Image 1: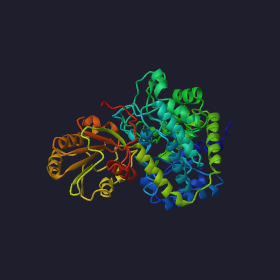
Image 2: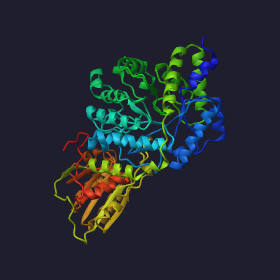
Image 3: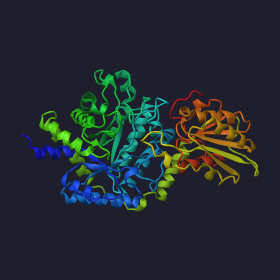
Image 4: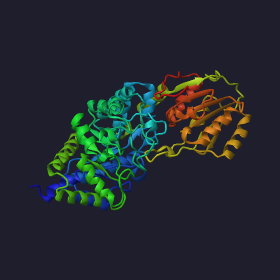
Length: 526
């Protein structure tokens, strides 16, 4: 017989909790002393001020774990690079996975992973919810975008494996996500359950190879996707997080993964919320999830832990499976206890900034230059207008709204007469007319776009500027699919990122100081 105390301990090993505030509150400390949870997740909007504060916070959390006689907590975050930077502005602004896909270099991916891992370790984190192993196969996918390396499963697999090796070389556990593949969807699981109606052979040929490569490279965690793939689940429409066929049958059985399975955030609408969340948490554990990534909404933690305990007491969850799962989690916690913490000075250091610049430079992609504008050779008195949308978070897994693109600033290092115009993410007709009139006085217009294929106002703006008879360069600052929204653009470039290393590299390339080396990691009708 498994007694209640043992069951209670095993169940709390399945909980990754989150909390509000940049410090360990008295309430949180009391809870951690009473409940042996597996770990915590840090979120930018809840916990992050700067690297020094993060390091103090993680040290305090681990101090409470030691006081409770527990092995080190798992402390994780979505520090992917690019459009999802969970730990604020202090860490190095790496351009992200799609930039690495355009560069096509396993060496760069491994070095980027090592730098991410080193900075996480310096701040006291030991789990990175990265790399994304999803493909970018649907231009209208709202959840993946530049978080993916590209559309080719072999390229994505090679780069994902390299990044896993890099992250884990610094004693930080990598997480292959989102299994079995979130790329071919048009629904954001934050709001509803995506369903992929592809056959099993197609899924095995495309979606799964990157995960296989990451697992073979030693990824210590796999994160589940809140999407349904009926072909893998006996024609059911359950999110993979709740599917025994996908997790126990495919991931554990056929693939042979013996590490820790962590859910994606359990507050997404693909998972039942409110009273139904405890039921879905039980279903996830029964399906094979080791760790439930819980968020900080009031009452969630108690509801889930109480529900799991009651389900175990009633025989709805197998006691031996709960204990085996707890052992997997404890094994990971003890393994990560040997991680050596680097000095905080590695966070955002010159070496890492140079690496971010190298990735940005090698990813820059010149798709077309029909007008022969490049490299720029402008007279000293020529005037340049730079038009850039104000970034927004296009999905909750996005921190772009906190970025102010510095393209105009980067261009001024090469040409002094640069004026900057910011437009809404989806400009109105009035915005388009007004800006078109203002830019007629310029000798060159450089217009950046952010997912213009989803924002018709941006597409209208670019098309109108093309007709304005002023030379124009269109730059996709996020996904390359923007060209589909304005296919007549005479000159078109991709940066895959609007962070400062990408803007600096673009300015250098426009003036011929860097070659355009990147290759499109997705297909475009050219």
